Amino acid sequence: MLQINGLGGGYGDLTVLHDVDLDVAAGTLQVILGRNGAGKTSLMSAIAGLLPTISSGTVSVGGRDISALPAHKRAAAGIGLVQEGKRIFRTRTVEENLLLGTYSGPGWSMRSPHRKKALAAAYERFPILHEKRTDRAGGMSGGQQQMLAIAQALAADPQVLLLDEPSAGLAPAIRNEVFDTARTLRDEGLAVVVVEQLVDVALDVADTVAVLDSGRIVSAGPPEQYRDGELLQAIYLGG
Ligand SMILES: Nc1ncnc2c1ncn2[C@@H]1O[C@H](COP(=O)(O)OP(=O)(O)O)[C@@H](O)[C@H]1O
Ligand SMILES: [Mg+2]
Image: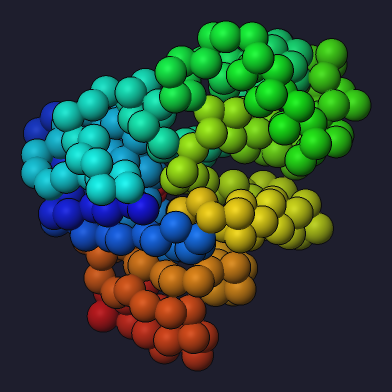
């Protein structure tokens, strides 16, 4: 579903991604591991069309090369991104935040039937958002804000969902809820890519793992291969 070939890029003259290859099938939960500064967020940005400079490579969704498309057209082509740090509009209501998500779906979705359907689906999946739909989003708990950010991305009906450290700063119980949601979406057939710093958590949730270091994928495989910790220790210690 998501296919990345030889992707390189960064911020102007500063190249932070080098020759990244990644294939994520539909119905797969791909975890990206890596130290702080490894390039995980830059990779998510590059896929979504938000990295300032792309120097090489291609990104395809469902066989369609979207490399030349700007971010809003990639969203319409099926890429959903939940950025690091819950990028919701805190002073807007929950419902206003959800409606914003419906502007980037296929065909721009400004027709009211589609928007109503997207709202209904979000409220069915996350009943708490229905309960709080007229509340200011910034007044909700961290976990609820993360659910809102995910619901907003889903409102555009993506085929690929990128979650950049969705559990950062959340209590373990809430973190599990976020990952339950990610697994459910995987089971519904999405290609889900999750950036996660905590190794144990990542290995529990992953179908497949890729490790980024200094902007390169230095290791990839099933979670079992990382469980004893030796491989990751070698990578993280620069081995
Ligand atoms: N806006 C930016 N401008 C310049 N360099 C950046 C910017 N954002 C990140 N970087 C650099 O890119 C590298 C990768 O960062 P990032 O993708 O945020 O890593 P991670 O998400 O794995 O912590 C780091 O060296 C970081 O300093
Ligand atoms: Mg990051």
